[in-house]
Length: 235
Image (cartoon, rainbow, N blue to C red; front, side, top):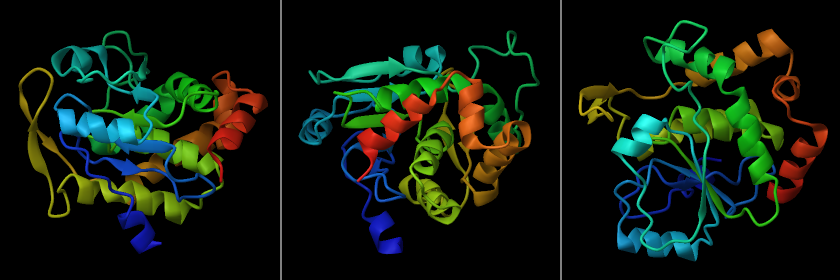
């Protein structure tokens, strides 16, 4: 598993933490990728994305992030689908806003259902692949979204977690937190991901809905949507 997962990283100049999400469960390689945003994508990076057959980008960031750090295209002709994982603002949120990374993961599970279902539907549609799912740096929001897809395609918890934890390698977080500048220009701290974080999202889903498919059904997904995802992405 380790050698295969490490080989998932792909050098796309100007894009952080870019890697193939395939090779986990029945998800085949070369059709679904994950990364940080494209706001510093270089022309060379765009050529490499074109060579990967990029057709769709699913952007999980907020509108504020998109406005501050818009993705660059360099004449790429992919379609971008904007599906914010988190509520648009704190004022309209009907539950306490997370104050740290530990609180973030159950919060994402509680609020990301519509985004996850829309992503699943798009990934199951014809003409969508290859696709990239990204947020700001590709570790938390992207981590949950990709983990849900991999789980639906039969991946084990251990393999999903191993793939998720690779963001620490991709973002230089193996030695601990590092500073970054957010969409408002403020310096913040990027913290490593940990197995228990992702597990807390899935625990919330199971505690409140019993299973991942039941959770997705509660947000409007149909069995046909889940079958289409498996058919489109599986080996």
